[in-house]
Image (cartoon, rainbow, N blue to C red; front, side, top):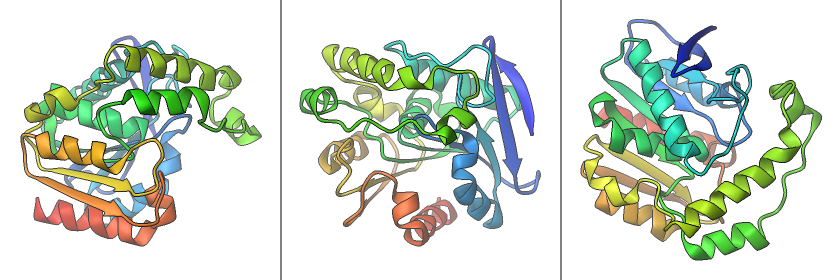
Length: 249
């Protein structure tokens, strides 16, 4: 367990696996912390990787400052996570993320291709459509805030985060919805992009379009009868897909 300051943000992270193994940055989703991906991290450490498991900026122990959601929060998080790799002296790492962490992974791929040995993302597409913006605004179910959420992020106003995230999402859509897809050709590393066919937030065809525009070799995998959290719903198939990709890249 360690922490370091990156661009005035305190970033907490854990490492799993042996120090002499290839490094893999593994980034969690919205309202989570790094340890929520511990099962994935331990499986990949067991497969021969040194897994870096951070709390993204403002989540969990990565404070101060506290978590905020300006319209460019994905770009901010990507710059800080790339800065973490720089701080750790890593010039080449596997970069992997889920949901919001997946969008950050794609952004690192296009903005800092020099850092990326491979990029792996699931529950992410690089672009938010007007139709998706309307669904988030009008139909997206509210997540129940539990004591577990509060325990993950002590002292933070977690009850406000859903409204703040939705407001930022709406502003992103209003400005065209592009996060990284328009620059996908800049992502030169091998890419594994995974999506569940029942993921309401990440339509299969939008994920496919990112993969088709990527500048590197893309492996695109759709998991049938699966929603957003592939690693929870199909854990064995998910780990098999990731480890096979890593071994072949």
